[in-house]
Length: 159
Image (tube, rainbow, N blue to C red; front, side, top):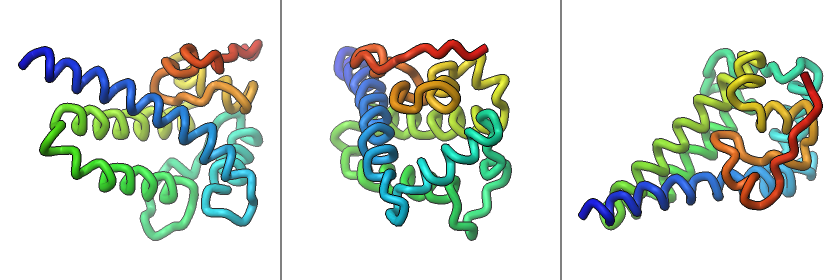
């Protein structure tokens, strides 16, 4: 039983990190290139604001679910991911809970990084490098595992 639960936990962590990498690279930056598309909020709003404000994005300061901004779109996507994974809860409870925990950790770290750039530089250097260094690399936010695994972790020369 322990092996089954440990496997679900580890697979949940790896799956969540792989999903984060894939989504960031191919959806947020790939599909997000089209200025009129839904995914454009990432490149054409979030990245622009971060570049202008040295990582700071004050759109994360308050949660206003009635606003149609970067944060509410991100929360909508995260909610959709939760709903899509709900059928896995009964057959794979720890896997599903690990994915949900990873989504919550992602949101917490991403939000904190864009409200406290000094913290981001110290604790999420790969994401800091993505925004202020090479935005064609460093796709992970929560943990840089898949960036290292796939060779997309590029350290910047930023202070």
